[in-house]
Image 1: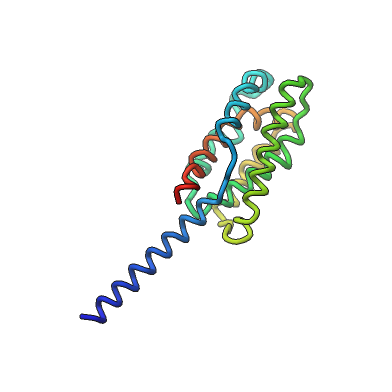
Image 2: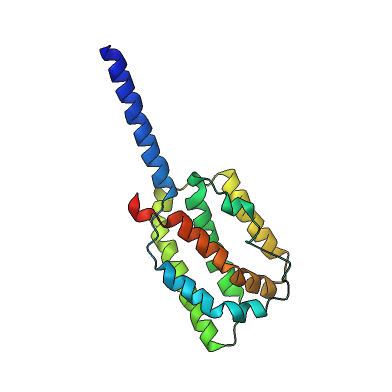
Length: 176
């Protein structure tokens, strides 16, 4: 009887530890004002989307893999998409309107801050599965199929998709 209790206790302890570890892998800390980011996007959305000449093409919007990201892949996908926006989209976009440019710069700075915040998490516990790598590769491929200025505009116009995904997948960071 004692052996069964000890075995049951060890099994329970192991399940609790595995569950906590899985949640910690999913919940890389992101401490940025999402409301401010979403407001900044809303202020530029109309201006950006009116420049989009390819209304029937998407880079992020229809990517089911983004919406169906497994908990263990959240950190990896977040890291990869932040790198995508910082390394390609924000750099590739040419903006002549100084007000729009300021808002885009503010968003880009927030993304840089998120990248730095994630670095410690990424080094400790962020593994990229083949599924996560493929999901972000699809986004890069979609981007590469368009001319650079059009792809940057399209990606900026779809920024709300990524912001909503970040909010959904990282909103419970402080709760875990």
